[in-house]
Length: 306
Image 1 (cartoon, rainbow, N blue to C red):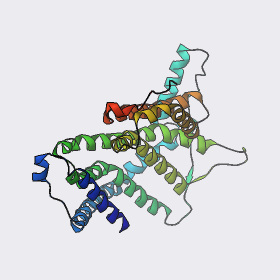
Image 2: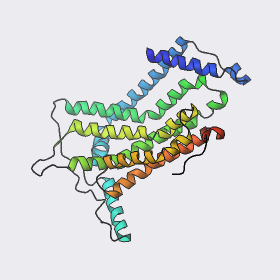
Image 3: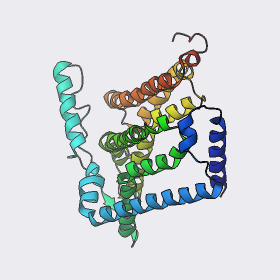
Image 4: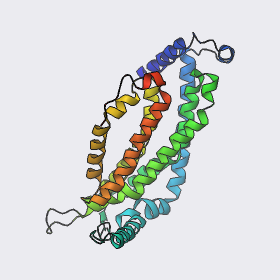
């Protein structure tokens, strides 16, 4: 209930800040909504979101073989496409630079043995994965519904960017999901699944542990890829400026390097491949902030040269 009230107050403040605008079409086309109208609109949008996730989850549930055998469980074996492509890439680099180890990117030894301890473990895993798959598949529609909820508080010329914004948010999330699935997940499974404190200890990974790791990596990276959108909103609100992002670029680079080192095996090439797209997101966020922030406010003074 507190969230609804906060949301209502947000719309009130947003509309009060725009009352001084002289846009006549805005006054003609927009009618201020009451608290209960906001509540009814939010309920309608949430119902559609839940319905879309439920529908996509049913589709995923009925395609169990594709979801599990072809997608979720595929990265646990050494014949996964990412392992084969990286191995060929490493050998190609070795042909150019002989000092490099030809097998530095090969992870063909990856083989994770999964076991299930609980009687209902596999059924509950099937349900969980179906819901997560439904959430991912329905994400473009979810973004669209959220935007439709916010749209009444915007000017007519701002609404023109609705479809573009929804497309960008959906594309960034899906790009993050694909990047995590084909890069982050294989490296994470290879490192954690084959790591041994002693040869006397054999790894037998529980099914729920494997599933939770894959889901957390995929969803977290998908959320990280929304960084340019978050920066756009923060810059629009005046909370973050391009100067702030540029001045703190070196700290951001260190954070990206640490993140890449944690989620990849202890190999320089692997860390570089993961670092590049993450750093590209940060640089893209700076460009987004520059476009949003007025020129006279973008750089309040001189920026120190790094």
